[in-house]
Amino acid sequence: CKGKGCQLCKYEGWIEILGCGMIDPNVMRNVGYDSEKLTGYAFGLGVERIALLKYRITDIRLLYENDIRFIRQFR
Image (cartoon, rainbow, N blue to C red; front, side, top):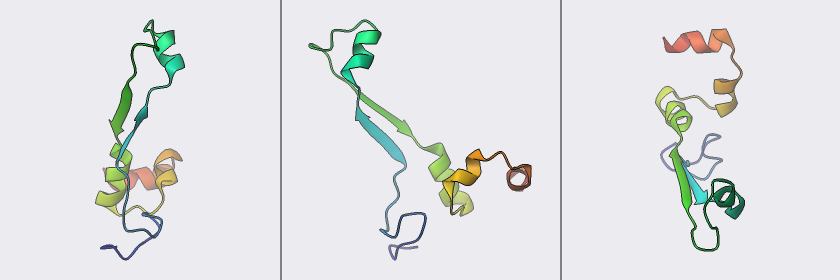
């Protein structure tokens, strides 16, 4: 959309492709770390969001519906 806004970017001109956030203290405790002494960040690359851009897919849900007609387009 070149900054004009579209459904993919929610009409803002930006799209998030890298998600990140603080690791919940319960997760740290569950894996044996002292959450009072250690904290952490989790982050990951949204490969499906890059596919949206590359193939000009307008709705991310299409990637998860397992519609064979849709999937066959990407051979």
